[in-house]
Image (cartoon, rainbow, N blue to C red; front, side, top):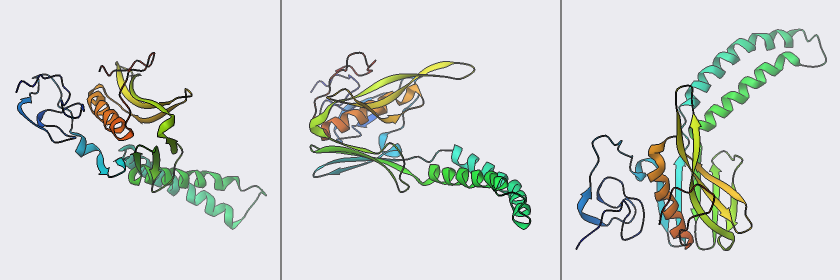
Length: 225
């Protein structure tokens, strides 16, 4: 059988990573997709995301596990150590009705809590023919929502320009648009190498929602059917 290499699985339509099997449906290919010499190998989806297929849909979960969380923990501990003595002196002899010296210490505890959240929190997208539910847990955080599938127009990958002092590049953003025109961001990437992963996630979600993938006009969609 002649299997044309389009970069997408001919069984389920998900973007294939390098190898002889599809990461999503497990289809085996006689001629595996080979890695170009200068191309950066993209990490397979299972190592970044936990994909759980259920009878009523699919759940995609990933950990925040931001490295900046460890840096923030170190900073907040130093901050608390410095502000502790100021707060202790104030509590011994309060000189004002307003506890202003306690505010820096309170900021330290807020920073510490935010750092812990970065390390332990997860985000889950549960997609089915009934609804799409996105939540952040175990510590609830803003951005959680639930939308009936009947109100979802499309899920798409857009290009977001990012830059630093030395260079400018494009990174993917996985978004959802409803039939009344509202947009919700599901996931934001950091590098161009993540486009293939985001396309795979997009098609996994659309398959669970039972929505046909289509290009969204004006969204700078990187997916081509």
